Image 1 (tube, rainbow, N blue to C red):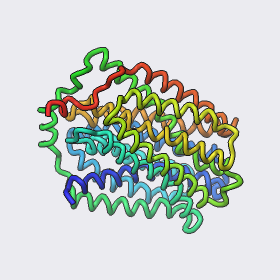
Image 2: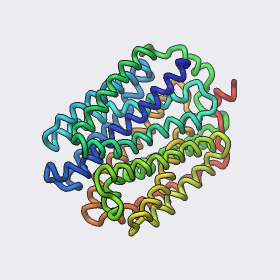
Image 3: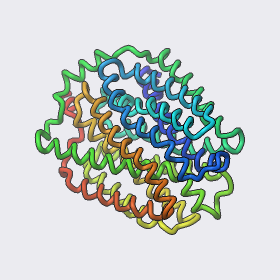
Image 4: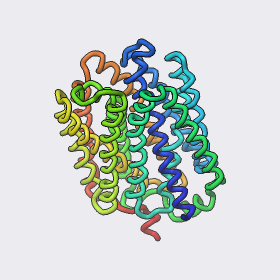
Length: 401
């Protein structure tokens, strides 16, 4: 196996772990800490808010360090740092302690997206499918968080759900340094500068600002939708699958199946992005989100499960679209910082979703949350309709080659 394939495998596993670690607490809070610590779900989940703030804000310094020092070096820091913080989270005895440990985890978790995604597309012509494959691993991390954590709660206790993944991540970091190394990618960056003029040939000035503005707007609203659905789904299932769910493990299995099936949407979207208009693909995905969120309120058991699969297909399907558009428009030498800005927007909005979920659930329940998400999806659809009808399928560097 070539080093490029080995590196791609590490990047995919890293994306899996990044989303896995950030959602372990969601299942722990929903299924065990409410009983063990005597707090309601609405009282517990705000302790995760600082973690998601750090997950977003930390993207800027992480992207800057990656461009100035080494993207590979930052990946090694990610694996080891987030693993250590996960183990520390397992030692928490109070909500404040677990909030501080999760905050530290969010700082290291912020490294992946502005560093790993540019490494995935580095030197590639068609970027849709590689980003989609990488995205599938991230979403499998989302899915596995509920499944593995539910299993651990039932058979080994909630602390083990933080300890063992942390140990694995540290070992992967050591293996990454050994097999890939952490030296700065100077030759690759220099080559990117020679090939790329910084934007595509097709768009300049006002048109480019318009496209980036739409990307950032849809990124922000998409982050809110993604965080709300992935964080709340275990609790949604705990309440709405009352005729199907019997234990934490069963709830975890349902969440895993929904997230895993939905992850396949990224492969389809990635394939289409390399061959069809990004605008047309985006319109279809946004319309699906709005439609299925609107029909979710009031559903239970199998109906709720099937509609959950449908709206998660659309939620996960949106993820590679914004990344592909940025990859086509951003020059190689400052791509990490552009992705950092994209993710600081995404995860800053995502962090605000956590207290929003707690407030809505405490006052009206999850039906009102899905009504709100349907309205947000409609705003995304309206914004996408303002995109140019033809967005380039390749970067300027690829066209020059």
